[in-house]
Image 1 (cartoon, rainbow, N blue to C red):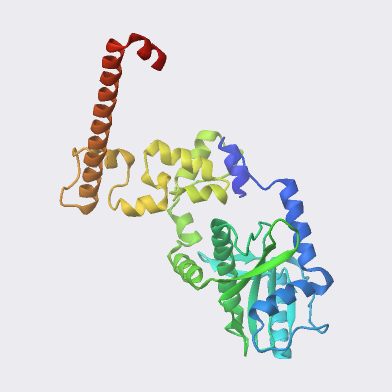
Image 2: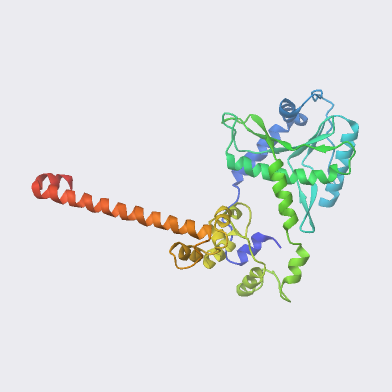
Length: 344
């Protein structure tokens, strides 16, 4: 079931998406980077990750990865990676298809490119249309690209594990426009941390079969169902909403509305949720800060009460200052009515 269709049927369509202009600009930039058999892309990669290997020349392999369906393309990609590694030369795989098991089901991934080095190393290449200004890009966008690339690295490691002489590089090449031009530049991003986090998260995911087994008998996500029935079906799968979901999930607005209605602290961000320990609702947090609930020995409760006391003290001081200012103006006005009127 497409989540966008489901969100629309629930009355919470996601009013966002990449503009057609941005989509066309991104495609045009990627085509520029990969023009002439990827000569510019390989030049950038060799400058930053070439090592002791000879520079790529006109004999760079660009295997055909076309096949029927995602399964066929994934199998063809795996074969091309093995053949390129055995050949011991440079190879550029344009939009390969990779497979990764997610909660017991295969997920198919398509990185922008993967380069095979003569020494058997495989490097993921991510091409983005956001600029690098003075050799640095927006940190949040670079972080998102690193997390995305880390998933590709994990998928490649599955193929490398059964390929003699292969090794997946933990440093990926991020290619972006330079400054305010359309000329490509590149930066190396180490994704070991993101890879470890993603691997840990994947091991904690509940299998789809287990989720389905826990659903009430007759549960359906058919968008043609009445809204009340569809809402109940979606509610049967507990969401894990966080503000970051807004950038990636079509159901995020529906889950956000539910999270806010329940007063869940997750709506304020995963970082806030982690800081609040066992306090799971906004009402509970406010009650703990006011001294109405919570164990005073709990460090979180103690910190909240201290913060509330400091806030009350600051507000009281501000009120005293405002009262003093009003009194000063009143006294000045009594002594010099014309001056007070001018001040007003």
